[in-house]
Length: 258
Image 1 (tube, one colour):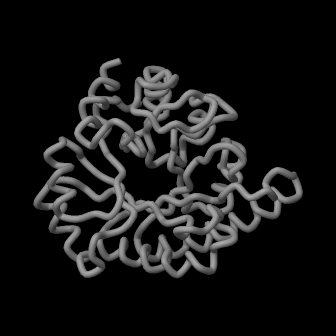
Image 2 (cartoon, one colour):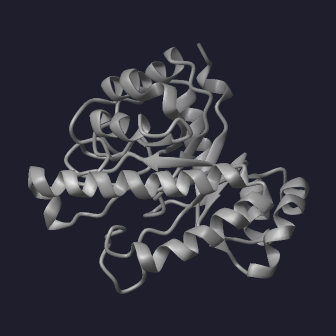
């Protein structure tokens, strides 16, 4: 059993730069998730930035759409996959160990059992391809729990995906569960959960509120994670509406003491 007070505090933002890591350090953060880098020539500088600031670049969120195009990884696979390959390679070089991925968008096909099965099979095939690339680069692919009709919107679908490849892991977005409780999900999926996206919501749809502004029972959720020996981090994502990076550490300290 772990102790929630030992979980590291993280925050997700866009492209990383030395200045952003310096700001994260001043805000008391231990680690961050990024979606890219300010200048492609700076990937080799990431380890030095980490050493100087004390802030680890824990994860990178792989892109799942292109600007102005539908949010559908299945339809955009051929366009996005080369970028995935490049980012996985760069993360391997920079020592960024966790890559987060969405398994699907919200195509109309997902509303029918037949269409959903087709999309599930495609998602599994592509997630396995990316996972193998991650393994070769010394990284791990983390499939994000998604809301609504997306593939991977419940423990049963996440476990089905996990069972296709021993190297796949899970990013537990606690703001996305709409079909089961947090405790139920954790009890089933916990062996695979290695990272999180932390925010609050109303149980009707994702809201990305800062914790304590929604309906999540944070004491219960944290206890459930402690009981399965989760080792963190608590990585805040999407809580920027009315809040800044500087609000994250105080909020996490409050949660730890519930």
